[in-house]
Length: 94
Image (cartoon, rainbow, N blue to C red; front, side):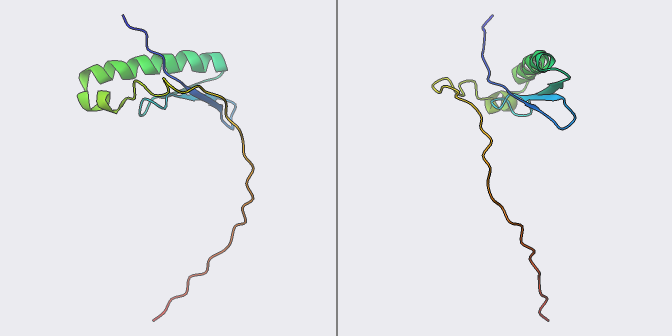
């Protein structure tokens, strides 16, 4: 059995749930009430996605098995950006 490592992203939503995704695997997401539960659930989701990939060649080809192997993760930052909403009025020319 081969051990594969997939990076996951875990965020906390407005309801307090932890939402996890594996960017290298399209559609691979899960959640949990705690951070630890989200990690367990995304691991299971990854395993299930890999099982599906064994049956569906087109899905297997969409998985990036090598994503990030040469890169080192440094962190995520929130970047404040000024944004002014403008109201656009459309005019109808007849």
